[in-house]
Length: 96
Length: 141
Image 1 (spheres, rainbow over the protein chains, first blue to last red):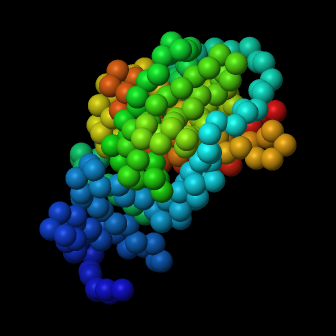
Image 2: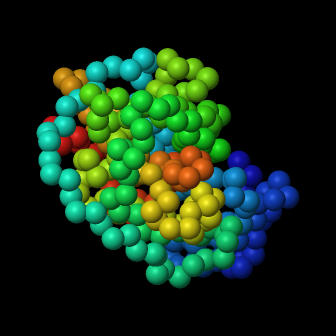
């Protein structure tokens, strides 16, 4: 594994198209900013592996019988709301 | 963008086969980018995402409203832009089901598949509030 030392606000460039910046350091938590094009998926490793494993376990051959869910009254339709969170600049991803 | 209770399978004609394109694939299946969304009345509310190029392989999916009453994945602005969503009403939401023994199963609420219902382009996203949800939520059987 390549190991590089970086200070706050310094970056590394991967493959000329992905920039990873040290945004904040607090105790043992490092905040990284990742700039990459939209077709480069970025995930926390443990979350990626959990979902990957779930997907692999869910793949079926053919289409086996599906479970029967109990009938329930349809819930009232929720009112969708636009997120009010602070929007981060497009194509910039922050990962803690 | 907050998504809540939006997926309504009945809006898809039950006998129609619909090709859903996932440009980034599913996590762990990044190379498989085209799926046929199949729904049969006797399997409702479940649907199948069947690989277009390998019809023998499929994922069982379910609209989250059928299994949990207060599901509200929070989708980042990058995902919204990627999917070309203008309004949360533009979306279909599906969650992948893992069939377990004895007719039971679990639902992955941590990695929903969000589909733009107009373009049928979708993506398996990790919502900003993914930590609030289980990847093995039991089916309400």
